[in-house]
Length: 300
Image (cartoon, rainbow, N blue to C red; front, side):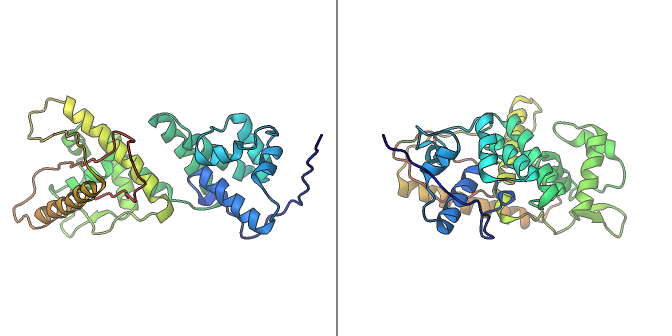
């Protein structure tokens, strides 16, 4: 019979990753492992599994990192103890794991909100205002609408113009947010108009915020399709079989197309009189021969 005894001195080097800097708990755990491995050459996956109570499952930690194994509530607590997280760090880590493992959009939104609340305790990951902006479709629509109409204080009129219509109190909240972000201000004639400024977020949370925003936009597209409003619209769906080289050409065409659309709007010399949402989606329907790609999210 062979006994394996693990002896490690608990230590927290300055170069250990900080959990508040992450929106992916698996990436945090992976970088924690590599940082501690550098500091303690004998540190191993087997030791982590031992500390987590998985003495007969030495691949547990590796499977968690790969996303093969889910982390239950019990093991979240074991990770927190092993990582020696403070109370605030533990609350953040718990919300982060639940967010990454959420199975539907409502759950993701709930836990993402928990993440935002936790970051205000220790470290500013993203401002609450920026999060709220991306969490509501109406903010960007109202901002764009103000470029078309002259508005002073008739919030009810704005509420009725939106599709779908919103309560007046929601419109007022949106105006307050847009003003606080300096995305709108009053011109010399006393009308609210968009400024040239854009929402700024930290680079490491931008993709997740845009994901949330795009999911809201897709929900809006679905609602619009079901609404028989009689206004002009163009909706099409194409299922494609394409090679990797062909896919790159398609992506380039989409990039050029977006640039052309922006140029048309920018150079339109006639007064704008309506607001439209343009969504273009290109996503995989199969895993056959699918290779990793550097597809980045964009929000224009």
